[in-house]
Image 1 (cartoon, rainbow, N blue to C red):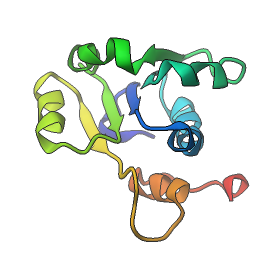
Image 2 (image 1 turned 45 degrees about the vertical axis):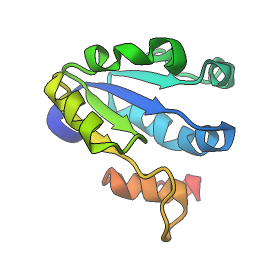
Image 3 (image 1 turned 60 degrees about the vertical axis):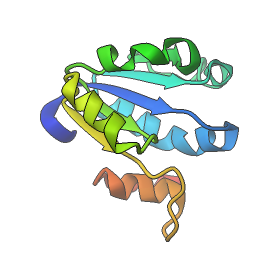
Image 4 (image 1 turned 120 degrees about the vertical axis):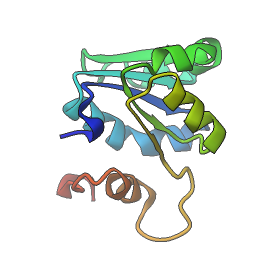
Length: 129
């Protein structure tokens, strides 16, 4: 179902509006696979999810609450678009179960959204095509 058998996920998504919108399919798939998902992103994107979000998706302001990420990630899986290896190691040292860095701008096919599904070893749903 999900890597490292964690029922909780921290999903970290900075970037601009287009980056955020392209992340929505994988975010909702994560909500189907995890009992609890904490999304850290820019507060200005929160209204885009308010009417759609599953009950177990919690929205956090990345700019205001980002300094507490190491503490928040303890005993959770982490999906992040920040690929700094030192920071990934720091999250692991802080107790994250599994940290999965995702490529923010893959250089090769397939399309970005499909690439995320493949990276996570999740099957790509036909309705997303």
